[in-house]
Image (cartoon, rainbow over all chains, first blue to last red; front, side, top):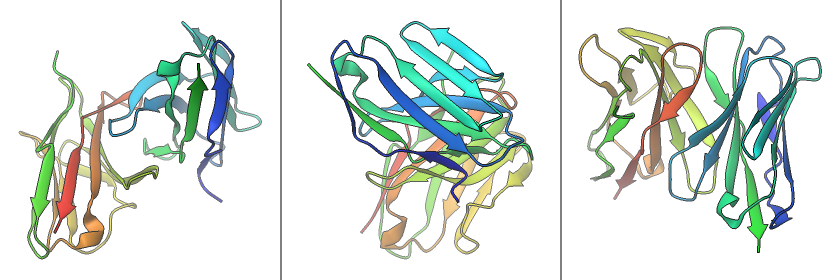
Length: 111
Length: 112
């Protein structure tokens, strides 16, 4: 079982719609959770961090964390073509601060 | 407020040569992570370091690869006797503690 799992996609979303991305993790003691966006040929860019159960909103992005279900999600509202990228879920484990990434979900926003 | 700086951005090495990749963390950051990424693949964890200490090197091959983060100066990822399979993008990230980590622009290593 992979430590952090994501659906690889591609997730195709019409412009203006909501993109919903999911991530599950295996380490029940994980403490910190992050979403990164990576454009092709570029480095990952941090877009959201979440540390406690519930929702956290930042602009068009909402991160949701459910530690009991070991599940973290990202919603992108009013999706734009510029949101087309790979979205990486990352988790720090209970033992030390190793930051582990999922394989990423590719999102395509179609005009 | 400079971000994470990696150099060189592009590195070409012949098989059997050594590759040295450098990473200067953001100011005030004492944690450094190195990742490798092959085209169309995810980020593979290699090593996690704090100043003068290797915390976790579980993702780094036992042979030919080494990493350090000295008290002064950048973190260095060293690959000895490179092979074609080492060709990849190598990313460094830094953080202040166990919170948000920020990435450098990466070093694209090509082994010919």
